[in-house]
Length: 153
Image 1 (tube, rainbow, N blue to C red):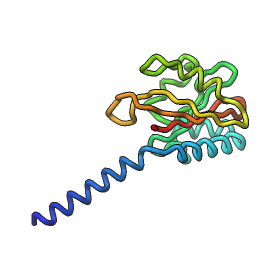
Image 2 (image 1 turned 90 degrees about the vertical axis):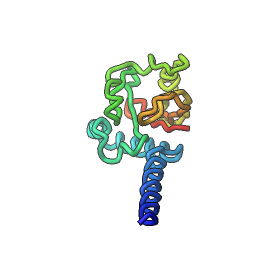
Image 3 (image 1 turned 60 degrees about the vertical axis):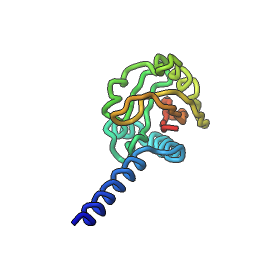
């Protein structure tokens, strides 16, 4: 009986830890998501922004998701996580991290068509632990938008 309990507990723990590891994406995952986002926006901008905002069609995978802002005024127009929906309509250039580093200005300036630039900053960890961690976003421009996908370093 004890043996079955231990085996079951170990199995449950492995599923828990593998799920947690999967939820946290890598730099390669973020780059792939950005490429997917650019291709989709070039095909159908309105539909893609709607899918991003709903976290549909693969635009939300663990903590990897795109966010987009207007190049004209810096206003956020799309973000895939419900937690970040409050950012829609806010100027990305005003975003600062926990160390008062104005990372939003650098993300905005990095958005150039045909280029992908990486911007580092601190941001609350995904999940219940809101301790700021080192993150990076890959940033580019497409269809009049700056778009980025971040990952935890």
